Length: 210
Image 1 (tube, rainbow, N blue to C red):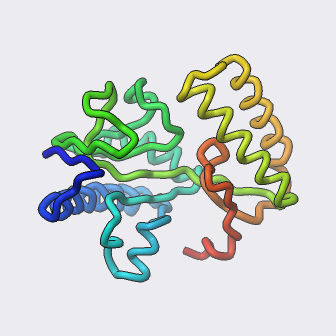
Image 2 (image 1 turned 180 degrees about the vertical axis):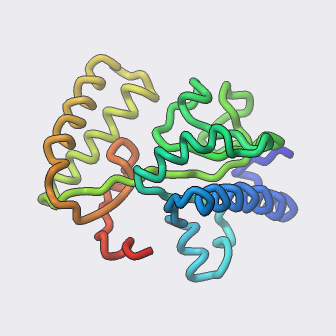
Image 3 (image 1 turned 90 degrees about the vertical axis):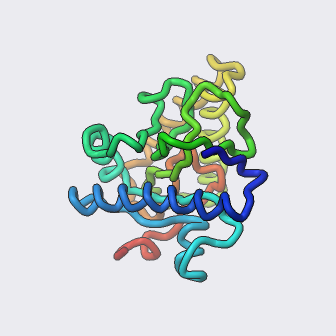
């Protein structure tokens, strides 16, 4: 089965969602078995709460995990995933450069709008699994600048390969700043700084208790 996300037909969307729900069911089974915590996020969460299903025009599933569960899942998935599902990480596929993981269906192809056919990494139908960072309280402007600089330097150093040496230095300087801030009281959560392009930190009271 092959689908281009810019040209999804009615028949395609039903088949696409069937496979995505199989991936989500598999993730759910593993998390329940090993007491790992995850939740639906972004448009997937909105659709579940507002529509009781997918948003009609949505073509993916987004899941988030706190770092402890995320790291455990990375190890458990090596042995617990069925053969029809591929754990897509930079370690399992060196051509994959994102800082979050995907579960991919091994029997399909899904070309996203920013991609091309025949790229050198796995392009099966997928669900996204985002690691979540806990953010300390800090001035909003400082947080926004630090997040933006972290995202941009990571992307240029590791994905775009644009002035890599210079951007490596900026990225690791940002990581050092995050390390210095880590002992402070955590008040919000969001995607990890490398991937937090929306530059957000949602108050913890909206996450806990799940």
